[in-house]
Image 1 (cartoon, helix red, strand yellow):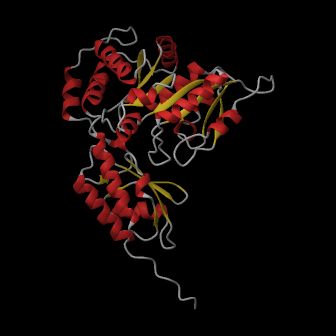
Image 2 (tube, rainbow, N blue to C red):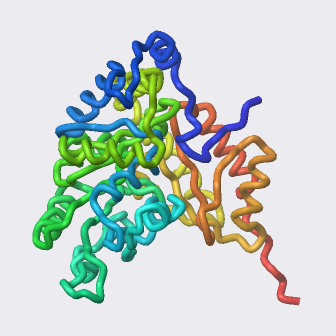
Image 3 (spheres, helix red, strand yellow):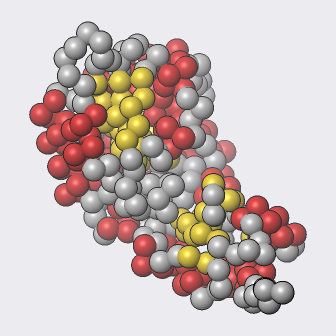
Length: 353
């Protein structure tokens, strides 16, 4: 029996419709601008996000790095959250490749960067300091349990950015999840950002690829940065074809993943030693804390794997489960039964003798 894989929505497999589209895709040399399927995907993505243009990149990490390379020069600075994917999980690429100085500030429990912290992080015009060029946000927020940023907050960040003549980039790997959770058009979540990256290979189930969206001038420079990083692709229409299916058919069903994540959270909340607030689970990520003297997070994930349930510890007492297209209601029920088997009994109290 195949394991119930709740490690990430990156484990999703392409749908049958995606496989057919990939097999039948019309292709050309994308570096030469001649792949019609890539061009169609990029136009579609730009329209959905409300931007002038879009660029197909191999991954969300590449998309974020390309964005930072275009927005910031060597020795210049990006303000970002200390729990952001760009700061924590992208191998220090902006510093290593671009010589860009990261200025991390606290990430709130709701995924927001406090406006006063952003204001305080902007450097004065002084030769001793790096020049601040960019504010980087994340929506939905991975390490904050899929928390979403509301357009009202985005507008306030835009005002701070305009005050200091800074750009705003949104790591929107799961921006469509945020839009579905809020019941808003995805373009409304992106309108106050200069640039935004969205991932095709997470909840949208495409096998590879992300899109980086912004102005036509920005995308022209981003195409050059992508080439510099070795990201120029040739007959990339076979990738883009799956992305088109993803954007056209897989967005609305994200609500099913969110409902299943909430069911997981409600079940976990009833188990002893678990700390979680189900009302905080807005999208498809379930973060919880384990406080048990008889079991560590790593022991729990190891024992669960032996029973056919896969998920990750993410530091300290925290663990994460992620719902997605390839996990149905029956598997959610089975996952809760496994967790109940492992956690259902409270640990024995010491007699003190």
